[in-house]
Image 1 (cartoon, rainbow, N blue to C red):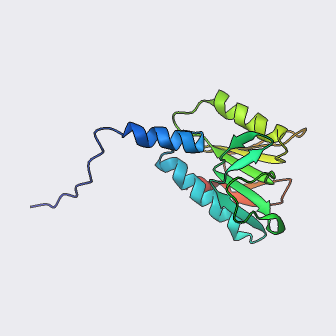
Image 2 (image 1 turned 30 degrees about the vertical axis):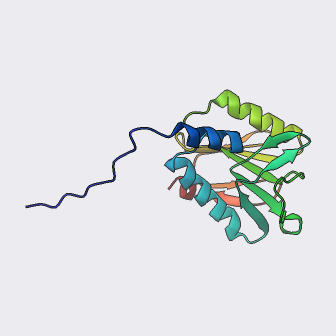
Image 3 (image 1 turned 90 degrees about the vertical axis):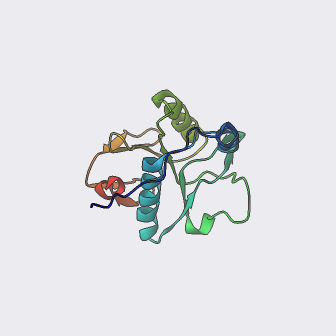
Length: 164
C-alpha cells in the first residue's frame, strides 16, 4: 500500500470582508505565493549588503499620494522609526505585480512614485521573470538573469536568485 500525502483543501471562497479590508488598508489587491516569494528574496538580497535600511509594506504619504510599496530602501541614517506614514521618499521603491493587477495600473504607480521624488522604482514581473528599474530622465534598465545594479544606490541583486 502506498502512502498519499494530502494537502489542505483550498477554501471554497475567499471571505469578501478580508479582501475588502486588505484592499482598503493597502490600496492594492492581496498578493499570491509567487509575489511573496519574490518580495522576500529581493528584500533579503538588498539586506545582505548591510548598507541600507530595507522595509517591507511601508506606508508612504508623499505629498498626499498614499501608497504601500512592496519594499522600500532608505539610507541607514534616514531609516524611518515609530511612524505610521512616512513622508520622505525612499531611495528605492519596489512594486511587484499581482495577478489581478494590470500593467496600466502599475505604470501609473511607477509614474507617481517618480513624480513624488523616489529616485529609483523597481518593477517586478514574477511570471515573466523580469525586473525593470525606472528613474527620472534615465534609460529604463531591464534584467532577466545575472546581476542587476541600481545606479542610485549601488545595490545589486542576482535576478536568478530572486526568481529561483
